[in-house]
Length: 112
Length: 114
Image (cartoon, rainbow over the protein chains, first blue to last red):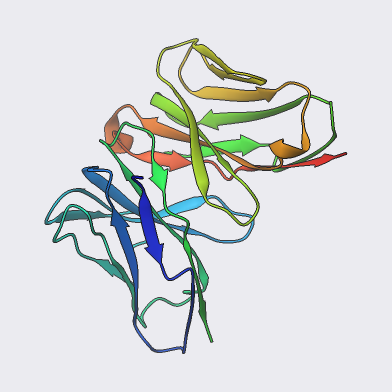
């Protein structure tokens, strides 16, 4: 079955360490996105990519970095510069930007 | 920038009661999308509305898009315990600096008491 796979589901890191969250899709979607969700809040866009080797900053890109070397993959690195990295991270993809999004099951990152 | 406000933030209902959540955008939208997130889960796409004044139904769910394409609503008739979750609207900007940008509302958390 087609879908988006995020791994790992839970991730614990020490403060000051960079960490990379994986996102892979086999839906042949061109557009991919990273969102952050904090308790009781909506989804805030971190980065998005509409095509391979191109990506754009979202509303809260500071402290994060991404790459899009393959159509299927859009990994997110949470750097030590991100001041409050503990959150639920959601990856999504869509056929094109105006289409409904398919979300992965998310990664819960806890930084201690 | 584009803002999408959703009310209410929380709604508690008895099973069998109706439920409505409202979504308002600060700018005109190309389309509005609705998602449902079960507790502990991830958002799942429900529907997309594109036309001014459009109304779509999915079983007990009715979705409306306002005439001015700046507001939308989701109505659930006779709620069931399986309806529990957070309902998000997301608006795609139609022009200016918000063109092509999908902005999510904060969501409405629905609890259903059996």
